[in-house]
Image (cartoon, rainbow, N blue to C red):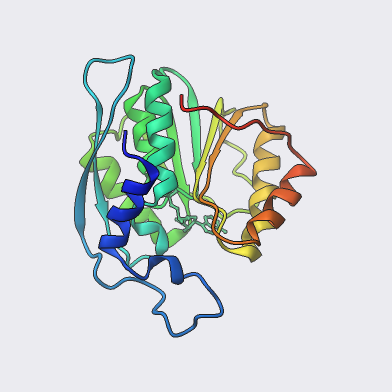
Length: 219
Ligand SMILES: C[S@@+](CC[C@H](N)C(=O)[O-])C[C@H]1O[C@@H](n2cnc3c(N)ncnc32)[C@H](O)[C@@H]1O
């Protein structure tokens, strides 16, 4: 397994300004790293339950928005679910999927997956589904946090969210969507995030009004 430090170093090498891009006070930093365009990463996640590691080919492209690259929490959550093993037959929804990485890992583990994000990210997610031959298990869907959920969605066993705590105005919207999903059938919610700034605390204070949680171990 990559350590979080190794992942950080890899991402820093790709985009040395990445920690500064979402800081509203540093408005001289370009919003997107122009260097990441149409690159394909080969990622491998060991699993104790199958002999071969889960392999994902991931197209990354920063042009549709920050979600178009691989974020550390996405790699950590993918590692976690692969270590836990099979998701055969489970219905899984991923919020803020970006490239779709975690949902693609869940699909490889046998789940029926809906990877979701805002409209600009849907094309890269669809290309990643195709590239990993997961069209039979992984669907791409627009889901804007805070908006009502489509009525024809199934009950979900697992909700995944990686690196979705970074933009303060979206905090109440994300809590609302998590709350609505939880009310539809009590799924397990696996939430992985990178501590960045003090404002993160506000998100967890909002979350605390609706949820209780425990910290996951290393799988
Ligand atoms: C930091 S990226 C993480 C992407 C991916 N989960 C990963 O770990 O690589 C955050 C994602 O949340 C999505 N997002 C932000 N605000 C959103 C909203 N209001 N509704 C839906 N998705 C949103 C972004 O488009 C982006 O893809």
